[in-house]
Image (tube, rainbow, N blue to C red):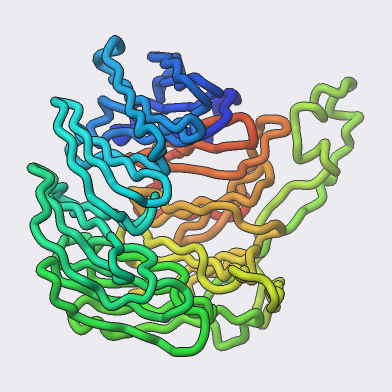
Length: 458
């Protein structure tokens, strides 16, 4: 892997959908860099500090959320002189997003008073009263033709279906939730999943015409759903719960066909490979290598104590670090708080928040645990390669950690004092964006051959 130098950032950083550009917030400025040369191609000055950045689907426009002001500014890469400013006045702006056609901006006002759709082509403006949430509760079909927007009125939750062409409400129906948490269209646009707040375990599947196809409730009397995710193929729906279990439903009967437990002690028989992060001492005579301190200053692994980080394959049984959440505090750190599917829908990774240093990788084809990655520090972020079954994660250290079906390995970041707190793939899987507290860099990732043989020494 090849790493770029570090560049300053003070907020959001993201690749454009076409992977050609990187948008970086630096105080009041939005810096657009070329992904290959890293040269600055555009520099836009905003009126306040940038809180949110989002590219339009066509990579031609980009919006900046200045939520402290509150205001939205949008820019065009092909027409730098074109500008757009949205100010809701006393209503404020809690969140802004692009429509699928890249020519409309949806803004949600403070206190969820209304959601407004504004056109960049004319002065047309459409209002939806009483949106349920600020940043959540809105989902678009994959073909970009329809939007599902959750609203609340008269103490009931509703789903409004809007045409993304005319922005007229095509229909609305009430849903059987106490306090709707979020909504998401299925990948084939044939169904809508809705789940309730953690106080009520309820997952509801609706057809676009408002018919309830299924109602799933794993248990009563206890904190319920924490995370929900469709598989890319649309055949599976994963539900992560506060009871530290992952349940997978099929799209034909909407019944569970797999339940995966996250126990603090993993015992046999177990086919999974357990990779544990360890420090291996380096047996080097530094005086024979060089007569100055340049080598020590340039190699973070050695300067931090003459060791290298690697994975060690551990036999079961193994006890994982477990943190029992306090019973007298809200939003306990337990349950499946992080999960995501691989592109081919074969694997799904999960993190049980009461065991934050362990990442579980499940094989859906064989309905078994494929691997466990046990880190020294809590896992900050993890992301699948958008082109293959390669997983990358970070823990706030100077290392990247990768897993493929053939093994796991650690990659050292050569930049001094650069701790990786967040990461993002570009759309073609060739580059990673890595974020530290106030800087970022990119790493060129080699394409993974179909039959790769990785080891922890790579």
